[in-house]
Length: 153
Image 1 (cartoon, rainbow, N blue to C red):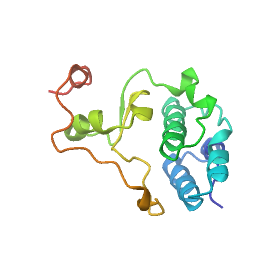
Image 2: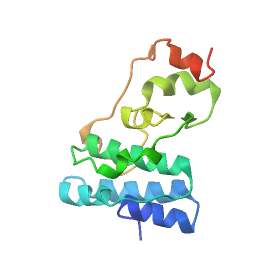
Image 3: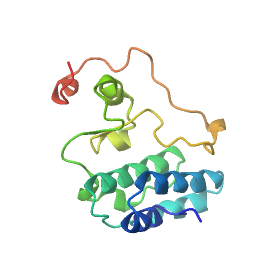
Image 4: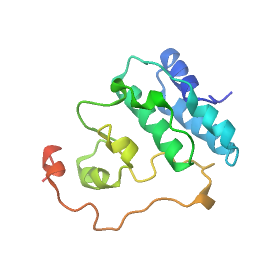
């Protein structure tokens, strides 16, 4: 059975460190409830607690906040816990060639946590495409001091 809440994702991660699998399964369940705002809000509501992995804890915070904002759901208070923010940047994927793009493309919920991902990092086959996806112009991001801070030319 797929995890139905982000808390269940964290619980499964504590037993089996295949983080990506648990998150993808949760997203499939979350998107299958598209249109049922109560079910989607409940999927984000419970505090997942600490997992023991700073990156996973921060990504859970970014995921909870991003989904809440994207689907116009209440933003759970737990996403603002201090340990949900990284002290150094994380790029997904961690490839030098795409870091400039990731710096600009990352949704604010992830960027605030120093997690740099694509413009729609939580897309899945069940993603409700009728809601539209996010895109950026090809010349984005403009050069900035943040690029230099992250070791980019």
